[in-house]
Image (cartoon, rainbow, N blue to C red; front, side, top):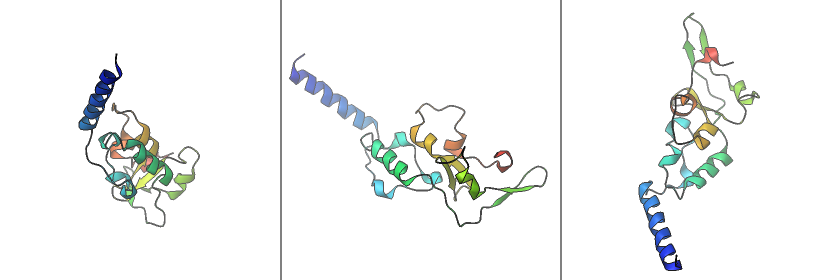
Length: 136
């Protein structure tokens, strides 16, 4: 195949990929911190996805402290709430995020690196988790 034909093929393919993804370019310095406000990585322009992931990795998980975490009542009339100490637990360290807006926890790694094919294990990604009774 000649270089001209190859170049036309690659240019067409690149144009199709850009058209099929979001054409909207975002300012990566103004990405939302709260997991509740984030849009899916796949919805970003294909040419910006790596930059978006890099920004979130450098920021680290959203772990607000100095706030009053709301309590929830469970079946046995027990009051439970999120505990900021969970941020430092070995099994949660580095990925656990808390959303002030939705009062739920999310997984930063799931958000950044999950495959685009969803399954039933999206709790820490889409809706968040708030069953504080089963937190340990």
